[in-house]
Image 1 (tube, one colour):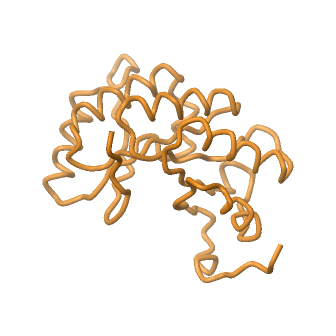
Image 2 (image 1 turned 60 degrees about the vertical axis):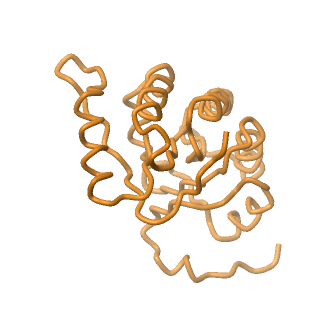
Length: 181
Protein backbone atom coordinates (compact mmCIF):
# COMPACT_ATOMS: atom_id res chain seq x y z
CA UNK A 1 0.00 0.00 0.00
CA UNK A 2 1.32 3.43 -0.90
CA UNK A 3 1.29 5.83 2.03
CA UNK A 4 0.45 9.51 1.65
CA UNK A 5 2.26 12.28 3.47
CA UNK A 6 0.58 14.28 6.22
CA UNK A 7 0.95 17.90 5.15
CA UNK A 8 -0.99 21.08 4.55
CA UNK A 9 -4.16 21.72 6.54
CA UNK A 10 -4.59 18.81 8.95
CA UNK A 11 -8.03 18.38 10.51
CA UNK A 12 -7.83 17.00 14.03
CA UNK A 13 -11.33 15.61 13.87
CA UNK A 14 -13.81 15.51 16.70
CA UNK A 15 -15.40 12.14 17.37
CA UNK A 16 -19.19 12.55 17.50
CA UNK A 17 -20.97 10.53 20.14
CA UNK A 18 -24.53 9.17 19.85
CA UNK A 19 -27.05 9.38 22.69
CA UNK A 20 -26.21 5.81 23.74
CA UNK A 21 -22.50 6.66 24.12
CA UNK A 22 -21.35 4.91 20.95
CA UNK A 23 -19.46 6.62 18.14
CA UNK A 24 -21.89 8.25 15.72
CA UNK A 25 -20.39 7.24 12.39
CA UNK A 26 -23.13 8.87 10.31
CA UNK A 27 -22.42 12.32 11.82
CA UNK A 28 -18.66 11.74 11.73
CA UNK A 29 -18.62 10.84 8.05
CA UNK A 30 -20.75 13.89 7.18
CA UNK A 31 -18.40 16.10 9.22
CA UNK A 32 -15.42 14.70 7.32
CA UNK A 33 -17.11 15.07 3.94
CA UNK A 34 -17.88 18.71 4.76
CA UNK A 35 -14.25 19.26 5.82
CA UNK A 36 -12.98 17.68 2.61
CA UNK A 37 -15.28 19.92 0.58
CA UNK A 38 -13.80 22.89 2.46
CA UNK A 39 -10.30 21.89 1.34
CA UNK A 40 -8.53 20.08 4.17
CA UNK A 41 -5.47 18.07 3.16
CA UNK A 42 -5.49 15.28 5.75
CA UNK A 43 -7.39 13.96 8.77
CA UNK A 44 -6.24 12.91 12.22
CA UNK A 45 -8.41 10.64 14.35
CA UNK A 46 -7.99 10.58 18.12
CA UNK A 47 -5.61 13.51 17.93
CA UNK A 48 -5.83 14.40 21.59
CA UNK A 49 -4.90 12.69 24.81
CA UNK A 50 -8.50 13.29 25.84
CA UNK A 51 -9.67 10.62 23.39
CA UNK A 52 -7.64 8.00 25.21
CA UNK A 53 -9.88 8.20 28.25
CA UNK A 54 -13.11 7.94 26.30
CA UNK A 55 -12.59 5.09 23.86
CA UNK A 56 -11.51 1.50 24.25
CA UNK A 57 -8.82 -0.10 22.14
CA UNK A 58 -11.51 -1.95 20.16
CA UNK A 59 -13.44 1.28 19.55
CA UNK A 60 -10.31 3.03 18.27
CA UNK A 61 -9.58 0.12 15.95
CA UNK A 62 -13.13 0.00 14.56
CA UNK A 63 -13.16 3.78 14.12
CA UNK A 64 -10.00 3.72 12.03
CA UNK A 65 -11.41 0.94 9.87
CA UNK A 66 -14.72 2.79 9.33
CA UNK A 67 -13.23 6.21 8.68
CA UNK A 68 -10.31 5.07 6.50
CA UNK A 69 -12.75 3.06 4.37
CA UNK A 70 -15.09 6.05 4.12
CA UNK A 71 -12.30 8.41 3.11
CA UNK A 72 -11.09 5.85 0.58
CA UNK A 73 -7.68 7.40 0.03
CA UNK A 74 -9.05 10.86 -0.77
CA UNK A 75 -6.75 12.32 1.89
CA UNK A 76 -4.11 10.86 4.20
CA UNK A 77 -5.22 9.59 7.60
CA UNK A 78 -3.21 9.82 10.81
CA UNK A 79 -4.51 8.13 13.93
CA UNK A 80 -3.65 8.79 17.55
CA UNK A 81 -2.52 5.60 19.24
CA UNK A 82 -1.77 6.87 22.71
CA UNK A 83 -2.43 4.27 25.39
CA UNK A 84 -1.68 3.40 28.99
CA UNK A 85 0.90 0.79 27.98
CA UNK A 86 3.48 0.35 25.26
CA UNK A 87 1.91 -3.03 24.45
CA UNK A 88 -1.46 -1.40 23.68
CA UNK A 89 0.23 1.31 21.59
CA UNK A 90 2.03 -1.44 19.65
CA UNK A 91 -1.24 -3.26 18.95
CA UNK A 92 -2.83 -0.01 17.79
CA UNK A 93 0.20 0.79 15.60
CA UNK A 94 0.10 -2.63 13.93
CA UNK A 95 -3.64 -2.28 13.39
CA UNK A 96 -3.14 1.20 11.93
CA UNK A 97 -0.59 -0.12 9.44
CA UNK A 98 -3.01 -2.85 8.32
CA UNK A 99 -6.18 -0.75 8.16
CA UNK A 100 -5.59 2.40 6.16
CA UNK A 101 -3.56 4.78 8.34
CA UNK A 102 -0.81 6.77 6.68
CA UNK A 103 0.83 7.78 9.98
CA UNK A 104 0.46 7.42 13.74
CA UNK A 105 0.43 10.12 16.42
CA UNK A 106 1.91 8.92 19.70
CA UNK A 107 1.71 10.55 23.11
CA UNK A 108 4.13 9.30 25.78
CA UNK A 109 2.85 6.97 28.46
CA UNK A 110 1.20 9.31 30.90
CA UNK A 111 -0.06 7.74 34.10
CA UNK A 112 3.30 7.75 35.83
CA UNK A 113 6.40 9.71 34.99
CA UNK A 114 8.66 7.48 32.90
CA UNK A 115 12.38 8.05 32.73
CA UNK A 116 13.94 9.49 29.59
CA UNK A 117 15.18 6.00 28.64
CA UNK A 118 11.65 4.59 29.09
CA UNK A 119 10.19 7.34 26.88
CA UNK A 120 12.77 6.64 24.16
CA UNK A 121 12.17 2.88 24.42
CA UNK A 122 8.40 3.44 24.17
CA UNK A 123 8.73 5.42 20.95
CA UNK A 124 11.33 3.06 19.44
CA UNK A 125 9.11 0.06 20.19
CA UNK A 126 5.98 1.64 18.74
CA UNK A 127 7.86 2.82 15.64
CA UNK A 128 9.27 -0.64 15.00
CA UNK A 129 5.83 -2.24 15.35
CA UNK A 130 4.28 -0.73 12.25
CA UNK A 131 6.85 1.03 10.10
CA UNK A 132 4.36 3.86 9.61
CA UNK A 133 5.54 7.46 9.77
CA UNK A 134 5.48 8.44 13.42
CA UNK A 135 4.50 11.81 14.87
CA UNK A 136 5.34 12.71 18.45
CA UNK A 137 2.60 14.33 20.50
CA UNK A 138 3.80 16.65 23.24
CA UNK A 139 1.08 17.79 25.62
CA UNK A 140 2.72 18.43 29.01
CA UNK A 141 -0.38 19.91 30.71
CA UNK A 142 -2.38 16.72 30.08
CA UNK A 143 0.30 14.03 29.84
CA UNK A 144 2.48 15.33 32.66
CA UNK A 145 5.54 14.71 30.50
CA UNK A 146 7.37 17.29 28.43
CA UNK A 147 9.11 16.22 25.26
CA UNK A 148 11.81 18.88 25.54
CA UNK A 149 13.90 19.93 22.53
CA UNK A 150 16.84 17.93 23.93
CA UNK A 151 14.69 14.79 24.24
CA UNK A 152 13.19 15.30 20.78
CA UNK A 153 16.71 15.49 19.39
CA UNK A 154 17.41 12.06 20.90
CA UNK A 155 14.15 10.70 19.54
CA UNK A 156 15.05 12.01 16.07
CA UNK A 157 17.27 8.95 15.61
CA UNK A 158 14.08 6.90 15.10
CA UNK A 159 14.05 6.36 11.31
CA UNK A 160 10.28 6.71 10.89
CA UNK A 161 9.90 9.86 13.02
CA UNK A 162 8.65 12.59 10.70
CA UNK A 163 6.88 15.22 12.78
CA UNK A 164 5.50 16.49 16.05
CA UNK A 165 2.30 18.00 17.38
CA UNK A 166 3.42 20.29 20.18
CA UNK A 167 0.78 21.48 22.62
CA UNK A 168 3.28 22.77 25.17
CA UNK A 169 2.22 26.34 24.47
CA UNK A 170 5.84 27.39 23.96
CA UNK A 171 6.06 28.53 20.34
CA UNK A 172 9.72 29.47 20.76
CA UNK A 173 10.56 25.75 20.73
CA UNK A 174 10.01 25.65 16.99
CA UNK A 175 13.16 27.73 16.65
CA UNK A 176 15.29 26.04 19.32
CA UNK A 177 18.35 24.01 18.52
CA UNK A 178 19.19 21.88 21.54
CA UNK A 179 22.82 21.55 22.60
CA UNK A 180 24.68 18.50 21.30
CA UNK A 181 23.94 15.39 23.31
